[in-house]
Amino acid sequence: DVPVVSDVLYLVGNATPLNPTWDIDKLDKLVRSDSDPNVFTYHGELLGNGTFKLCFQTGTWAQPWIHPMNAKEPIGVDPVVNKPMQAPRQDGDDELWHVTKGGIYTLTFNLSNYTWSSVYEGPLMEQPSNELYLIGNVTPLNPTWDIDNVDVLVQSETDADVPRGVGIASSPCQ
Image (cartoon, rainbow, N blue to C red):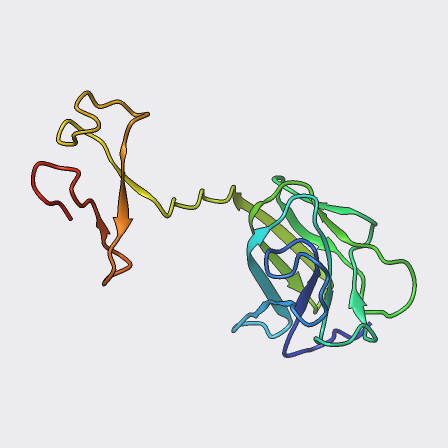
């Protein structure tokens, strides 16, 4: 097989937050290597129990697809290095990669030799809360540092990055 050289490669499936519904118009575009135009990388979140395959364009299902060698080819915490994958094709079985553990991954696909690699980078970082709380003996509601009785700071009306605690301390705080 002659390696396919393409300017773009997309991940389609329900394995990423951008496209959890197999929408052919909302594909994750992989990053093409500067040093090897046949190598593409995806770095980001993969959803646990999600599946995907690879393609070259958005907006149509009538195109060649790149599949793993086996159905439900696992992607998880164990690293994978230069494992074979199928050359692009339109017919046949619909083998898919299967994410066994959600988290942050780096996936690399080499279209010169049709191999792929996977590195689990770790779990998703917990998103910070949009709320900020004040605890301590300066608040009238909580003179004993009770974690179940904290004061909620509110977002400033003029600056979204500034929380305010109006009237909850002996002097105004900001």
